[in-house]
Amino acid sequence: MKRTLVPRMEPYATSIFGEMSGLAIETGSINLGQGFPDTDGPEEVSLVARAAIAEGRGNQYPPVHGLPDLRAAIAEHQERFYGLTLDPATDVVVTTGASEAIQSALLALCDTGDEVVVFEPWFDIYAAGIVLAQATRVSVPLRPPAFRPDIDALRAAITDRTRVLLLNSPHNPTGVVFTTEELREIADLAIERDLIVIADEAYEHLWYDGHPHVPIATLSGMAERTVTIGSAGKSFSFTGWKVGWASGPTDLIRAVRAVRQHLSYVSGGPFQHAIAHALRMPDAYFEDFRHGLQEQRDILTTGLRALGFSTVDSQGTYFLTTDLGPLSDYPDALAVARDLPHRAGVVAIPLQVFCDHAGVGERSLRWAYCKRPEVLREALGRLAALG
Image (cartoon, rainbow, N blue to C red):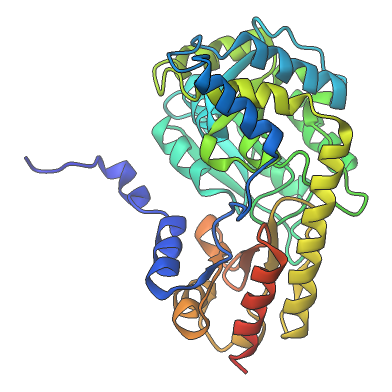
C-alpha cells in the first residue's frame, strides 16, 4: 500500500484545536483556546433528555431528518425570532452538530471545480469541507484591525465559477457581528451573481452591546437562496450533545438531506427531545444567557488590556481577538500559541492558521471567554506573572 490519506486531505490531518487542547492537557494549562463552556446548560433541558432515556423515547434511531417535534420547534424558533416561515416537514433537517450541517451543505451544493467564497479568517472546518466537496476555496480578508467585511474585495473575488458564499456572523474567530448594511451589500452581490449562501449562524443568540444578529435570510431576495445553520450546543451550552440543524427553502434543504443521511444517518435521539424543549424556552433564558457571557467577555477584555494587549471589540460569539501585546517579540501568533502553555499555563488560538493571505492573522490571537469568572481571573493572573 503506497498511501493511506488522499493528498488533498493531508493538510487537514490534524487541527489547531486538537494540537492546542493536547498542549493544555500536557501542561495543565487553562484552555482558552477551544470554544466550549465549562458549565452545563439549563437543568430543565437535561432533565428532558434524562426522562427521554428513562422512558425509552429516542433510545433507538430517530427519523432520518430529525424528530418531527424538534423540526417543528426549529421552525417555530425561526418564526419567533426572525419572522421566517418554514415548513418543518420539508424545510428543516436535524444534523449531528452544526459541523455536519455545514459539511452536508457543501457536499450537496458544490461540484468539482466550483468556487466557494469565504471571509477570512475562516473557521477550520470550512476549509476541510470545501476540499471534501472538491471545490475551490476563495478567501476574502476581513479588513483589519477591526475585521469588517470588504465589499469591494468580495465583489472582485466572485467569478463565473463561484457557486456558494459561505457566511458566518456572529463571526468565529474574530467576534465581529455583521451589520444590516454590510449584510445588505453582501445580499445584493449574491442576488446579482445568483449565488447560494450557506449562513453559519451557530452563535445567533450570542451578541452584545446593541449589535444584534440579523440573519441574511431575512433580507429581501435571500430566503430562497439561503441555507441557515443553527447549533444547540452554542445556544444552550450542551456542545457534547452535537445537535444542529439546517433550514431554508425546500429545494436546497432537499439537497442537504440527500447528502446528510449518508453521513451520520441519525444521532442524539434523547437529546433531540431535549432541544425541542430548549428552543421553546422563554425570551428571558436567551437574554440572561447572553448577559452572563457578556460579563465574562468584559472580565477577559479588561484583564488583557491591562496586561498590554490591544483587543478587537467582541460583539458576539465566545471569542475575543487581540494582538500579541507583551509577547510581540515572537515571530508570529503561532509561535506564541505553542509556547504560551509552557511559559504561562494558558492556551489561546493563533488566527493565522485560518488565513490564506499573509499578514491578516499573523499577529492575532483568539481567546475563549466561555469560562467561569474565576477561571478567567486565574488565567489572567498566570499571564500577568510573565511580567
